[in-house]
Image 1 (cartoon, helix red, strand yellow):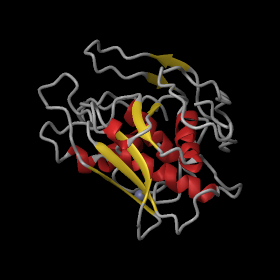
Image 2 (cartoon, rainbow, N blue to C red):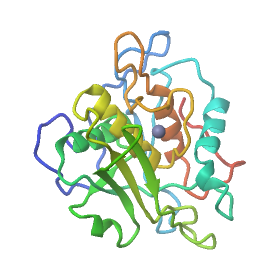
Image 3 (cartoon, helix red, strand yellow):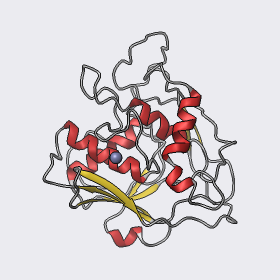
Length: 258
Ligand SMILES: [Zn+2]
């Protein structure tokens, strides 16, 4: 997960170590979003003792953007996860447990998007790289990033398997999700990488679109210096989603970082 390096495929990693690529800034007075503050800060480990623990990274997101509220983040989590949430009997947050198995076929520009999600979530979203889709279909499932036909340059779909609601790990995604990129569209430029990040974010449980997460906003804020393609709100939604255990009810959903 060393980020930024070139090539160098996959690596086994998956040990949950916290990335140190953060450029954390804790000043909260500036109104501007600054550049690429990736939170960082306090890391706590899973605390449920149920054998389905996640690791949590409670970072301060305020330095990214100052004009959204905890309520807005909470409602957006519920709405974007609703395709999973409302179709599931227990009516709870549904997402993968970290670290999440992921397959990229060794394609460098897919690996770059995967690395960006780890780096820009401060290691909250962590991946375990695997070398075949078969490995995703064993055990707890995971995400495959693949080429395929897409009318909109990219889309995502999943086979929707979750832990039984009687399980202490209820709400955990167990299936394989597919982040599909059409290689008739650009893949390696900033937008191309951002679209791949976006499709992976769908697989992570953000099933629906919302303002700030429409298609080409990836995990980064302010992809361009004029403030367009700002993924900071989508990233805040994603990080707060993963700061709540899968299986969390709507009433118990907490917004830790905003
Ligand atoms: Zn989308």
